[in-house]
Every structure is written in C-alpha cells, then in structure tokens.
Amino acid sequence: AIGDPNGTQFIVNSDGEMSMIHNGTKVADSNTLANIANGGFYVDIVYNTSTVFTTSTSSCELTAKVYSGDTEITEEIINSGAKFSWKRVSNVDDATWNTAHENQTSNKLTVTNQDLEGNATFNCEINFDY
Image 1 (cartoon, rainbow, N blue to C red):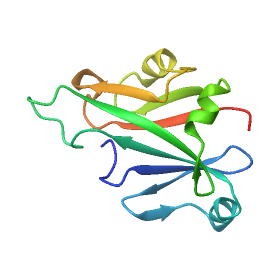
Image 2: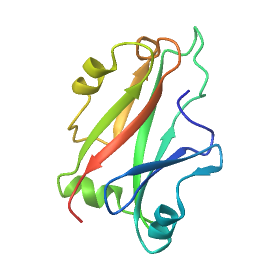
Image 3: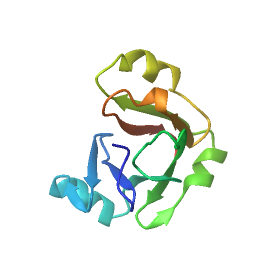
C-alpha cells in the first residue's frame, strides 16, 4: 500500500520520532499531536495515480510535502538544502533499496512495479535546518 486518497501524513516530533496518520485514523500519541498544534513539523505524502497497481499502471510519483503547523514549507527547506531519505518496508531486501534512495535533494520519488514486490509501504525522512 502506498497511502490513501488524502495522502498519508507522517508526523515528526521535536525528538525526531515519526508517527503516522493513515486513512484518517490518528496513529500518534497526544504529545506528538500537541506538537503539531503548536507549530510542529509533519510530512504529507501525496501521489499522482491510483494506489492500486495494475498491468496498465507502470509507475506512481510520490511527493513529500512538509508543513510547519498548517503552513507548507517544502520549497523553503528544499532551497536551504534539505535531504529526503525514502524508506521502503516490504517483504524483500529493503536495506539495499533504502540505501539507494537516501539523502536525495528532491521531494519526489517515482515508484514502479519493481519496487512493489508483495505489499510495500513508503516513508520519507527529511533532514533540514529551519
């Protein structure tokens, strides 16, 4: 699974710990949610196609959008040298895939059928100064 139609939100608290909101269900503790309400950072991963891959779907572009509170700051952090590390969780060799997709300068990732052996979930870790 890549996400839901509204995007999957990954929440980062001030300690750098990531939690997730998936399909509208908050999967985060109250401290993390309070951090967002007070201007904390979170990442919304959106995609440009259906979440279901078929023989006619050869790829999907994921885009990580970064917010501080309710303000999108993606372009600002890209311009300041942010690094995006995409992580795959699946039933195959994720370490090799993850290494090949770390410290990228782009907030976009193209996922192909080859990236989706069985079920796969994609996360994005972002290093930036703000």
